[in-house]
Structures are given as C-alpha cells and as structure tokens.
Length: 399
Image 1 (cartoon, one colour):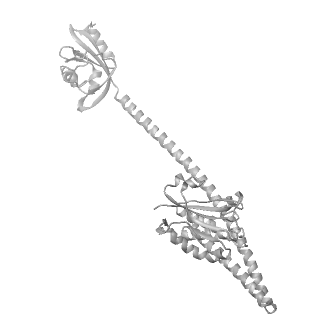
Image 2 (tube, rainbow, N blue to C red):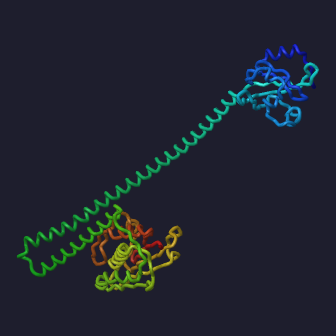
Image 3 (tube, one colour):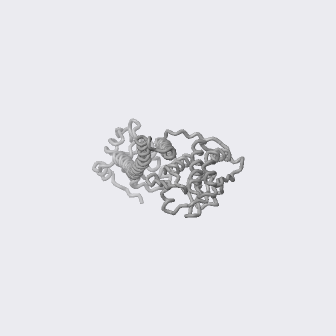
C-alpha cells in the first residue's frame, strides 16, 4: 500500500533522521530528492545526485533487474554496496518503502553506512581464525611436547636399563677374568718357586692346565672385543650371497677334533646348492658357536645336526619377519630348564655352565650370536628340555 506523505513531513523527516534518505521515482528510477546525510555519505553535492538513476550508486544492477521494481522483492534492512565519490565502495544497510510524493509514485530509500562495522566483522573473523589456528597449533605443540616427553621418558628408562645391564655385564666379566687369572698366576707361581722339585709328569699337567686357562682367556677377550665393537657400531656389515653348505663344512672342520674326542656324530642335512644372504664372518661366528656349544653339552656317542626348516615347524610366530631363511642346530645333549633358557641371551644374566666333560665357557658366545643375528634383521631362539637335548634356531632375511 502506497501512502501519500505531505511534502512538509518528508522535509521534516529527511532533516531530522540520521540515515541517508533518497526519494526515487518508481517509474524511471531517477533520484528526485536527497537529504544532507545521504550527500555526506555518498560524497557528492545534492545537485549532482538529483536526476541520476539510483543504480549508478546502489546495487549496480543492469536495467530490468531492480530488486524492488523489477524483481518485486522486499528490501528491508538489506546489506548492499554503495558506489561513492572517487570510486569508493561502502557497505550499507538499507530499506526501501513505496510512497506517494507530490502525487508521484516513489520509493523512499533509507540507508546507513556499516563499512566500519563490516571491517570490524572481518577483523573479528580474522582474529577468530587466528585464534582457532593458534589453538590448533598450541594443541599440536602440546601433543608433540607430551609425545616428546613420553619418548624421552621411555628412552631414559631404556638407557638406564642398558647401563644397568652393562654395569652387571662388566662386573661379571671382571669376575670371570679374575678367576682364571688367579688360577693362571697360582700355577705360574708354583712352577717358578718349586720347579726343581716338580717331576716331568707334574710339569706336563701344569702346562696342560696353563694352556686351557690361556685358551679360555683368549676366547673370552676375543668375544668381549667383538661384543664391544657391535655395541659401538664400528663393526663392518657386508652381506653377500653365499653357499650355506660350504660354510657348514668349513665349521665342521674346525670342531671335528673336538667332536671326535667325544665320539659325537656331526650331521649336515643342508643341500649343496642352498644359498643365503649374509655377512660371512658374522654367520661363521654364529654357526661355529652354536655347533661348538652343541658338542660341549652333548654326552659321548651323541649327535649334533644342522639343517634348515620351514617356519610352520616351529613354536615361534614369524609372520612379521617376511621372507627369510631359518637354520637350526640340534643336539642330543643334556638340555636346559626354563630358568636357564630365559637367561641365555641377557647381557646381565651371563650363563657359564661347564660342558659334559668339564669344558669351560666364556658365557659370551650366545650373546654374540644373538647380536650378529639381529644385525641380519633375524631372530635367535632355543627350544630345549632337560635330558632331551636342545635345538637353536636363527633366521636370516632374504636379499
């Protein structure tokens, strides 16, 4: 419904109101009057505004797209853009009402500048976004910090455990070195002080005992040197494709006399063309130690066998180890109880059992084997029962 408002009332309203006011001819959309506030907001004098089409300043619509006249929309507190002097655009909030003015159908358009409000809204959005980003970064930072603290705590525990194990290990080594050296020194003292009173047979026994002590000390020191090189990461790892059966034959030759003395049969079930990808010196050490231990803890007339197996034939879950070779060394010896097995590969729980005929042991051999197998990304374990023998298994990753 269009209301006819008297000219005097219009003049009174446009002067007193703090919003910009335009009177627009609804037929041709030309501006027929404007108040001072509108002139101030638009940046033009009144005589430059009156007579111009309203879409030169507002809505910037093409002809035939006037929201009120053509599209029949209600414009009430709608946000729009206003083009002002010097091509400055301002955000405005405007309302449009149809009226009659001096008998002419008109649109009374009131508007207010909300540019500052919009700028503050944008700034508030930016600050909210920055705050959100900062909060996210802070949460990530806190998470990373907490993860780092947890990792450091775990590392600290591991390092403390490693240091504790090494302290115990060196304590054991010191004890193991002291005992044979004491015996060694005792024998040399007797020989030095009583050599004139000793018979040839006694001298020979002293010499045999000295040689046994010297050999065991040499082996202990050699193993200790190899272990320290692994721990410091200075030992070379050079894997190549090699024939396993050939390596077994070489190691059989090294322990043949030892096995023959105890009438122990050495059995190799590995095919002549079986190949592995390994560091030859390291794997020779592993094979030699396992074979030597098997002979050492097997009674006279027993058997020691080396071969390969499929992972399905073991009690260990190897599904996470991918492609690998699995090798075993089996004996018919005295076997081990559960407590001994659990101590075998622990640095701080060195096991030094004498062999079936009193053979000495450094207690480092299996620890070295375990370290060398780990270097090959493999696993070493044992299955054993008292008086039923032992079977040691180890895996080697494929190339």
